[in-house]
Length: 209
Image (cartoon, rainbow, N blue to C red; front, side):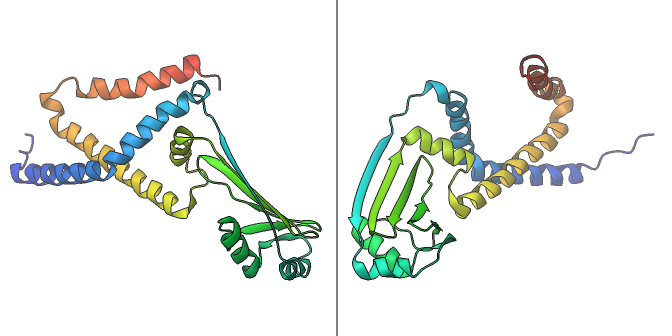
């Protein structure tokens, strides 16, 4: 004789699953829309034209700062001296404070990679000539890089991690809700199986591994 399910226990778990399902869906709704949209733009990146915009600025370090660079690190990687970074920010409106720079005999080079573009700053250690260049590739490139977490910094990386956890909660609670309602909906598990089999067949038949 089969044990009789406890209606109160079923009701408790249904309530919990529905609660976590809607909470997780609310948390990841905007993120899901963003990542779904950028999934399309990434898939068709070669067909979407981008017109890069390049901004260049030049400057000349004053002699005391040239001497400061000459007395600095011979070669390797280290941030620019604070006084040099302050001058660059005031004169060229470029923030390089704390940024790792590549030191060589004749140059100080700072890579300023960013989502949706690129930038760099170079200082000639002998003459003090400063050159800055920034390339912007447009809004589509920006959101594509946000999707990939490319050059976005630790804060955005944490957001992606939290968003991924919310998506996992959303999917797992949805799976358990399917289990609860499967008896009344005969197509439940065939549809779930189709969601697994269709991409698997596409990989096996059409993707060259």
